[in-house]
Image (spheres, rainbow, N blue to C red):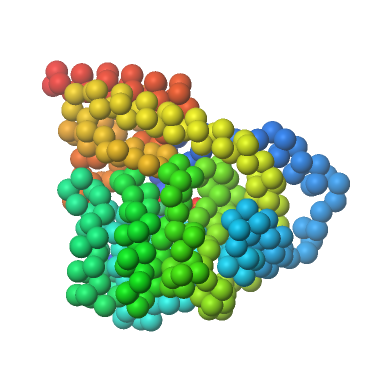
Length: 358
Ligand code: PMP
């Protein structure tokens, strides 16, 4: 392949590879095991059949959805911006604040798109490391800020892929003296419960990212949102593409917000399943799970490629991390329904005992 036109600085960029292999149990992308509730699908279908405005562009700023969110979160419409998944918001925020050549601090291990969008903006991703138990260290981050003087600091809590968290007081203590933007990715907030939301007035340099893809079970419809001070939001708005979220997805998200009881019940189930799966994995010889506050569990295993292939042969897709030096012998399992967890556990036990006999 020749790169005649591609920007010089992007030639070594690796595209995000979403594993789309065929499987019967998909546990690789931290999606919800539950479909969108029937009553919401019925409502959407009725609206679709009884006329809609799809010949018109969507509401560019998703005002109706922002109002619904503002009410739920006890903030104002102008504290919120809606994205085509929170993935798009990472791109928008990075483009808004990182000049070419600026440094951006990213957790390692962490969500790879953060580094990716930093490079797209022509900025420089600098990784700061979680400790050997894959937990955040306040002093490591403070030191990295002093050394690198970044424009943006990314914190993901609960962290993907580790499931570990950083406390509100630790993040606030950084936001207080750091003169850049602190992006706090709360994609898995609902499975954890602690948020920086109460801090956005006190620390106008904090941007919180949330998504409808995980606990809300709407990954295929691509809706994310950010919450921050109005001043920062008005700056970020300059970069948001018009009409970035389609009308159908805006409406689906709004309807989901009207049914908090369904979401809460499902989140409770997942959290219960997570605790069961953690204990069960902990009881398997050769598997070391990390405690997680999200809807997935990262586990160290002896030969992750063989385990990944063995699970694939049984129809289960989990996340593996190739040759990533920190995550080489790890797999990440999305927490499913109770029966999914029992099935993966049984398969894992079989694969590991076969491997012992090698
Ligand atoms: N942040 C984190 C930490 C994630 O794990 C993901 C998805 N895996 C995203 C953001 C993006 O989610 P979405 O674009 O579906 O909102």
